[in-house]
Length: 42
Image 1 (cartoon, rainbow, N blue to C red):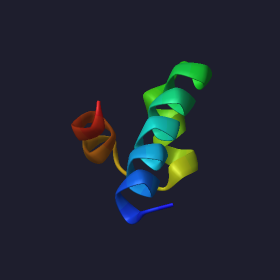
Image 2 (tube, rainbow, N blue to C red):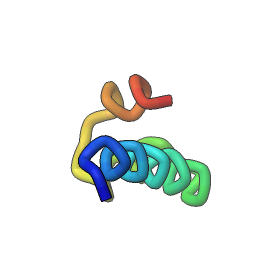
Image 3 (cartoon, rainbow, N blue to C red):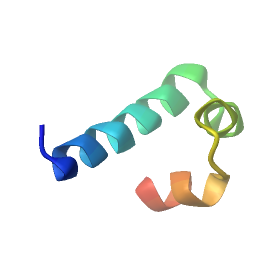
Image 4 (cartoon, rainbow, N blue to C red):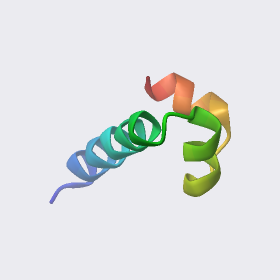
């Protein structure tokens, strides 16, 4: 897997986690990132 595919997959997984949990804050806490990178991805 190339680095760009890895990054895309990671970003998609983070969005899916937020949808599954129903809470952006909870997803960010689990991923160890702030809300800003999450919102940038979205």
